[in-house]
Amino acid sequence: MSSDPSTSNVERPRAIVAGHGEFAAGLVSAVGQITGRGGQLIAVSVAKLGVEDIEKLLRSRMQESNVKVIFTDLQAGSCTMASRRILRGVDDAVLIAGTNLPTLLDFVFSEAKSPAEAARHAAERGKSAITAHGAGGGA
Amino acid sequence: MTLELYRIDDRLIHGQVVVGWGQPLDLEFIVLVDDTVATSDWEQELYRMGVPPEMDVFFHTATDAVAAIPKYRADSRPGLLLTGDIATMRRLVDEAGVTEVNVGGIHSGAGRTQRLRYVFLSPDEEVQLRELAARGAEVTARDVPGARPVTLADLLAGNEP
Figure: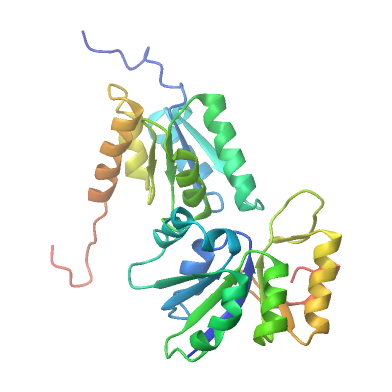
């Protein structure tokens, strides 16, 4: 029997989204607008925080929501650095850096997979969703 | 080319450094001066993973950095030196002849008061910054190249441009 999307638990937190400025809130808002499943994602803003406080904040959000997946924006970003420290040695934990909207859209619709599997699948989807058009590029 | 910027930033290597400064300055190397990172292979690997493969990162303790800085200044490539705190930069001003200091990011923490959007200082850190200037270093705050530099006087007064 297929699951009924109207009754599935689409609001259960499954991952954290963190990054520069309003990156996280903006992406989570967009996911919510497109799918109604923004509740699966916890947006974390780290403006004004130092490295240790970023780590504490992300760690506490993970513990509160019992999630082991973090999506960040930049490979070199402070959230990515902090997440690597937090996830070091944690089983079944996944960090996806370089997150875009298609990544998160794929993730929130992959409820049949474990969050870690869904995150890895979503990362591949996000990579393949980047295309260039026009300006002599051919098709 | 040489060391283009001597920056205090408690986030060390992060987006503003690698992208914000890295691209306009065409940075080819970063010198990270931090006693903790310089003695941890894992931390060094963490920071190396954050930079493009063509950018070198060199790690030093404050003591090692004093001796190594002349070599980096003589490097033909553009580079950036980072410390995570004012005290480490003060050693480099005193012992390695650093004359210009960029305050790039000191974030909120216990006992600190906000001075700029990206600078929070404790009373002791304020004294340390004044001492850098008293030793002849030009101290300005600027998080990214597109921002206007903030003088030390304006920084301490909390005058955001």
